[in-house]
Picture (cartoon, one colour):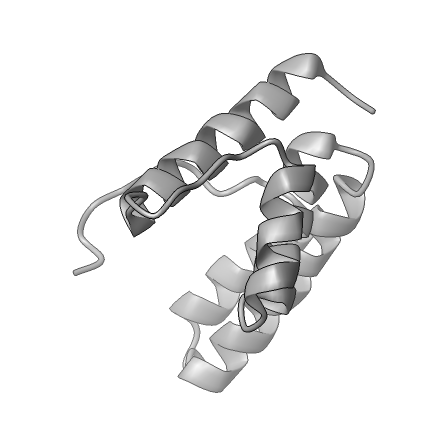
Length: 110
């Protein structure tokens, strides 16, 4: 694990700090976690107006908030124009949610 590169880290000051922490003697898990959290927070704040970032996050939080109540969950799915029936599987639901989020992303900024 960890041997595959999935992309490059942004060369912002905060991410350079993560790399520095990884390569230093203090590269313990806690220090790396703090540096990565700070760098991630900065990146998220910079993309706060990007609907491609906040909309999927909003959908996920709403799913979690309504998951225990079938009426609320059903109402959320209706709000998102996602239909389900007795034969729908979890995979069907995930596929529909992915399509919905992709469709919203193609619409552009809101």
